[in-house]
Length: 284
Image 1 (cartoon, one colour):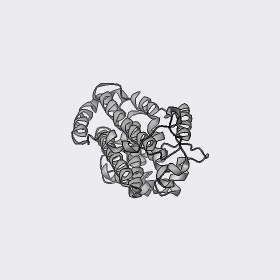
Image 2: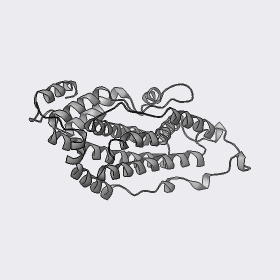
Image 3: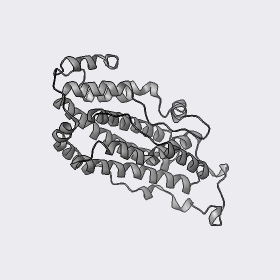
Image 4: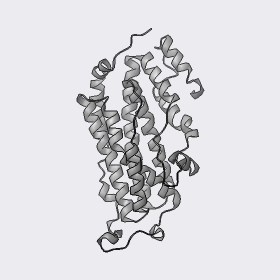
């Protein structure tokens, strides 16, 4: 059986890889600006400032696009919880700088979408704020994990987010929604690459341990979910709308990453790694 590395040992051993991937990420990431994607000329005051409050007929977005953007902004609004959950594992050196970069990128997604929705009056701002308050009050907390589990989970989550946003872009609702969804998806895809590269390095460093983490995180993977005003969950409505369906996760989320990591072709697993790999045989 291969020796298990502690999280402290893994943080130290993978630090150089984190630094390299952070530099690569910042070099290739698009420096897009959230304000460029908001049609500010469409904006006007609400009644509080002497204007007119929102009414349903003011929205020009289709129901699926409104739903997809509402879910995206609410998930991104809960960023403090996600920042806390990832940050508590990565509080050192390049790891911590990556947490800051990742948080900043996620935050600009929320800034852009919310400004777009409010300026274009695409959704009821009062209802959106009520959902935001409820969602953030509930918050988000992960079960206790080891470092390799965190990295695998984040790789899967970012890959899933990219799929959700690419499908939102594919709606072709209007040119600006398409552009917003595509630019967010591009961020998600680069973030997924970052986490996937760290998982790959973990596999080289501790094959059995990393393989166990991957198998466990596939088994319990669940995308962040939002409770909507009508009592439905975002899981239900996004699946029905064809934006993100958990039934497709095997093909669209897991298999591409397992292939990227060479899970079914590696020859360096011990008994425990082989056992974990066998649990994923259905994903070959």
